[in-house]
Amino acid sequence: MTTIIEVLGDPLSKALNIKPIQAKGLLRLAIKDVMPNKTVEQLSLKEITTILKEGLKERLNKIGVENSDIIVIDLTNFITANQSLVTILRV
Amino acid sequence: MDISTQIYYYFYLIVWCITGVLIIVKAVKSKINNLIPFGLSLISLGLASIPELLEIDISYSAAAIFRGVGLIFLLVFIEKTFYEGKKSPFIIFTACLIVGASLMVILDLWNKTTPSTMLSYARDLSFAFTIFISFSWLTYASLTSYKGVKTLSVEPHIKKRYQILGAVAFINLIPATFLSVEIPIAQTIFSDFSTIVLLGFLISSLITIIFYYLLWFMPVSVKNYFNKGYTPKIEEEEISEEELMKRIKEEIGK
Image (cartoon, rainbow over all chains, first blue to last red; front, top):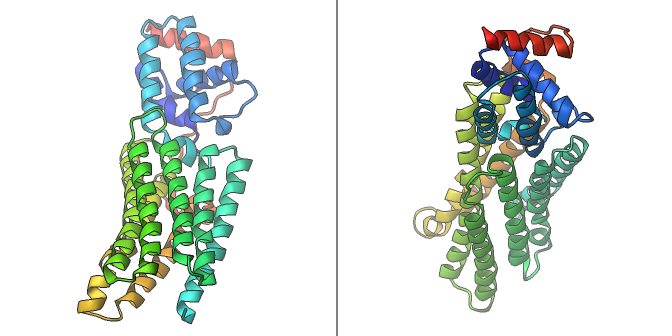
């Protein structure tokens, strides 16, 4: 089943030049950091952007990614542009 | 009211209201808040059949209010699903819809006091205008979103849903087009054109409801059919958080 993790994992793996599975793992950790009580399927657009801006940014800083701001902005723009997926993936 | 018109209104009332309720139940259960206005839209559009069936003096005006409210809910759904945090024509379209629905009511009441073909035609045009506004936007929103999604690595049945939504929105524009030329055609070329318009609305309602079920309650067999030939990437690997962070650090450092 495709989730928002798969959707965001591909552009994140390209931005960081890491394997898609690692990018998806990073996103899972970011979700766990910011919304530990929510499953991926329960996340709204607003919550996803919060996770990217807070959780993912923090994780990227931890591993020493210099352009974390740009990566987070790009991912936020990407999900805002394709926001209907947040609904369609959950039905 | 003839029997075929009655069947149409009963179908609309029952099927649309039930579908609307089922969609709201799904939205509440899955906490998909933006889907609630979609369900409310179907219920309101379905309820518009009640005043029509009652055949009272203000039937058309009362139905126009239900339709107007239903289409505004549809605009809210489009805004919340496709345009949250983005520039959108939501305010303009909502204002146009309110003007269109108000005109339907005013022209109908006016037509009751001084009946004229021009007033009936203007009233029908207002109705067609409200449908054009809402369903054109839905067609545009779903097809432009499909364009963005089609290159992503998501299951084909997900992409198919965008096409279904775009198609169903477009189909609703067809009877509205018929309606906007009904009176001139019925008076000049073909006197039974009203029957064609009614048939157009009935067929589009049937297709709409089938497509809405496919869209929001897609059976597994249909999902599998659309996913034929698609192989999901299997790349699960159980590793600890520390190990994952270490590996990413190493990858980035290469």
